Length: 421
Image 1 (cartoon, rainbow, N blue to C red):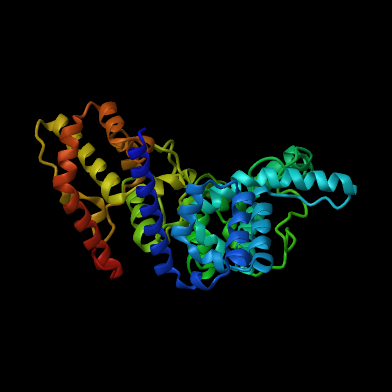
Image 2 (cartoon, rainbow, N blue to C red):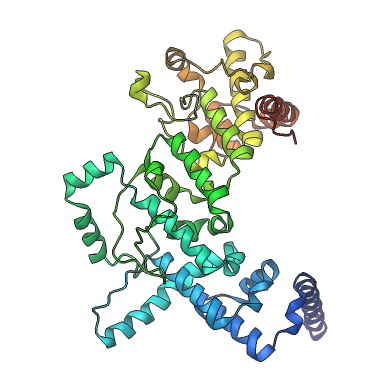
């Protein structure tokens, strides 16, 4: 580049930097009263070194949550980063190590935690502002979910040995010392850290209970939010390794932690109702999964459990348009006409009487696309699989999507009073 081009780039970079500083000051005026040497530099340096952050990462964090600059380094930020590191790593404190090994282990611990911390904090910078006692209480709850051993899991452990032997095996493999957490608390910190900013009693616990019923597990009934069965010390270190397998609830949440951030009324319940009314699952009147054997069913497309990531699939932009388009194509192919009406939407029947019976489910399985195609694939893959024209489907979604959404929300308004948006 010529000298003029370099100068232009430098001027543009400075202008961009000044704009960013201006936004930071407007969103967090207190920053002007912080000492550069005593506050700003040490705080930024701690994050850069402990979290292996790049300059762009730091810019993103400053833009999203500049308030971390005002946190006390020694009494707030450093202990909190240590605590998060221990949870992310499922770190097991071994008090029997000689001094030289302790020092070596600490160096490895710092190195192991870097990338995990970076992912966690970049995904949700406000986690730096949560009180450490707040974090401890939520970690304790997720640990309780992990430790709520279901009957099936207990029998499985008995067949393979004992819970203690499973823990010993996990510890011998160095769980928490050189790889990401296997615990639910650590997995959520890494993949969906914004969950920790939700209120425990008002958001997290009701969501876990809703999902437990949907997945047909009783594990949540064995969880005491304020129980004293601590499995970590105050620094987040495990006293011993967690069981390698405990219950279906923990496994489902660990697979897709972001499901915990969904609104129960705005997202989960309408989507759960969709899967129930269309026959992918069968639920009782309380929203609890009815096991296949209780329904005397031989099979069910997609299995009896809908994965968390499919609950996060957009109901109005993907599930409803694809479901109805699929049905119109099936009807067109069978009758030679394409006159299926959106008024036949099972979600729009206010009394819920259109839930399919077991016999109907068996007869109509061929009319339900597999969940991985309905909920998990791209529009191109969905259409290619069934020989649909992508342009035709996209046109259908644009024209009918708004009607589908309104009809569904209108039915929900009649039943629950939730406003139509």
